[in-house]
Image (tube, rainbow over all chains, first blue to last red; front, side, top):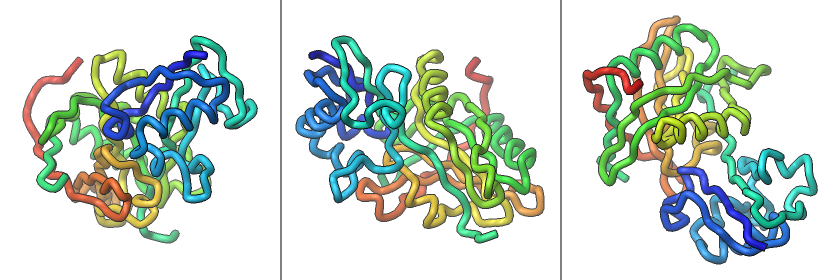
Length: 96
Length: 149
């Protein structure tokens, strides 16, 4: 079913500079797989070498974090909006 | 992206410094909202945010996904883009650490302000390489001008 995936600004250069991509999917996993099939450059930013979502990548279906749903097996319905939300962190080299 | 330039009004730069002083000796953090061009981008507004890293705020900062979504929403509402992030390095140089690199994203501008003994010192900006192996420095061009809002 058709769903929309919102791409964060940092990843738009790897997704044809698009703010969002509409695609057919029944689960979050299918949606992200379809997305990275269309835009291969996105893959290294979303997935670790073992194929799992990088820990610094958060995925929401509408306003729910998929970690609190069925993770990448979360089912999506027509019109759902999947948002990719990067984790932001940093700090000095100092150990305190 | 070597040779990249980040324009920012002097007043916004001063607000970043003031935020770093206010939270010292803890790290401050916030979002950079603006426009992106081919060779230069411009910060037109800031969204100061709370450092969520409660266990180690003197040498780490962290935002929640909710903070990031708020920053994206705030940018959209102002017809701007979320173009990067700022944070302070209390008593440390304004250079990205290995921890910064591990947690950074390409494309975003990362402004770092060094706050030494409570006083703002150097301010730098950086962009992560596409392959995440390191950073390109981004020249900060402070400009005079009125507030965006």
